[in-house]
Length: 261
Image (cartoon, rainbow, N blue to C red):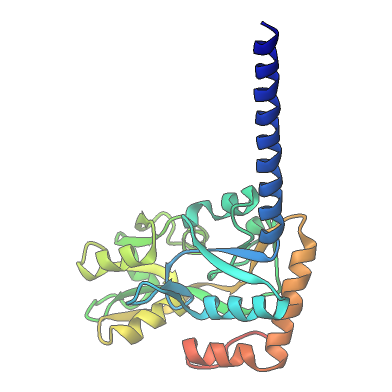
């Protein structure tokens, strides 16, 4: 019986030792990960962040984030997320930044820290090139699509069109534009930079309405309480502005230097 107890003690000690090693290993991995920034993106948000024909994640925000991470001396990875859960992903710690055409709003400021705005944008209505609709008030009673829980949804909610259109929400802009092309929708409310990108890629397919719904600005979202990371990032962005890197990235993706100084 004594030998049996000794065996049990030995097994217990072995188990505890293994647990200690596992915890130590996890701690070591966590410390290595401190040098890696995980950026949450919508990978169908061209030209800011999207997948190219080789399924590689590319875009203005992708290049901008990589350049900033290099200035910060950090590694960077991009994590496609459900855009409707972006703040939850950030606050849970699964991502470190929301960086993909993320509009600064008062409501979002209550949930996250923002960098200074880096790009001007507006919410616009896009329709087919041969559509007779040219003005926002002509959308009365029409079928309009937009991305769920996006700034497009906020812009519609704040506009006189709110109770006049039949709005349908989509997971991403690509799906909404597909329904527009098949004429299941009469228009899509969308970021102007995104609209102009698709207009350039599919010439003669789309046109913009005469007026915009709402002007806005893009910023990068960071978890509240992490001012240290925010300050490091802002310093890097300021340096990218000063040395001309931001202008070069903007010209490549947007055709001109549109980065706010």
